[in-house]
Image (spheres, rainbow, N blue to C red):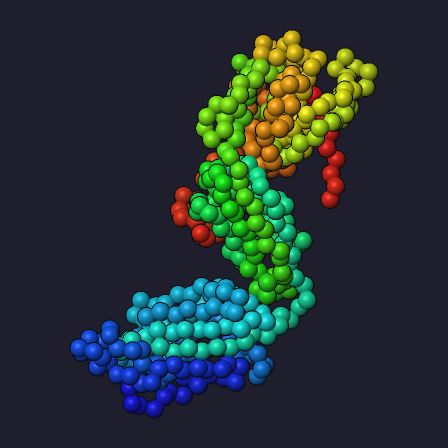
Length: 420
């Protein structure tokens, strides 16, 4: 290790190079090279950084690290910015070259740590730092996470709303890779692109009970496209409560409510009659309204027709934006438990509706089976996300690349018509 450094080890003036170690040889304690302190690998490694305008590095250009000594090789490279964001990269099989494969952030300070070994197996180390310049455009992509911070049921999806559309698949991959969801306990999950401006995240199964879920974006300063860079996003933290699942059997006119897999209540109900069948499938509680005035005109029933109605409704738990609720229906008590007579909602006695209202929260699961209605839409009318099989959910990721069964790539006011 006594030859002069290769000219290619000199880093441009955009980079500050810090070499650690004191040239310790491979002759460590007992002659075991693994017991030696890392030697200074400055003459063994060449760093080709993203050179810029002489002051800051160009974030559009990749990092490349090469082994300059035929008798040594690179064993590991980590590149991380001051906020803790790591740069993905690939190391060649022979240890001769490492290069970054994910974009750098603009306006960031990076530290690159390179580990090497010589022909005797002795470890070497080189550390380099550099700063990246600002993006060339002021156009930034904003991300807003949902729901609001708080406690939710185990069926609550995470949403990410973008302030401008992202259509290109490669750009979508950059965005999706930077959106991080961590839960304690950890579960398998993934993002699904609902449209060009909205993503949903859900686990393969429901969230664990009493879990903590933290959501953040690493997009700030990251180049997404030629004229689009990532902006800052407010992180989100939510928690889950007990596992509450209400299963309505439209054929037996009954609802069974489970809490942590134990039955806690059985309720006689009525669901949608022919022509107004209640949707089958999994829905998620969207909110609770003590009083709602429900009109037939809101779901397309002509005023004055035989099906027309205008009713005060209490203890209304919403499960779709189009107006499906679980609510008190004192006018149909005689049919509850024996017939389906509603216009699509799940009706029950006032006492049972009050109990249900008090014992569920947003994000709890309401599942309907054995109805003649269509299956709840996955998107656009609430949270029907769970009605997509996991394979189909994974197909909505920009990172899956045609392998939905493989491992995860990462570990406005609105009108709300009502029906009764």
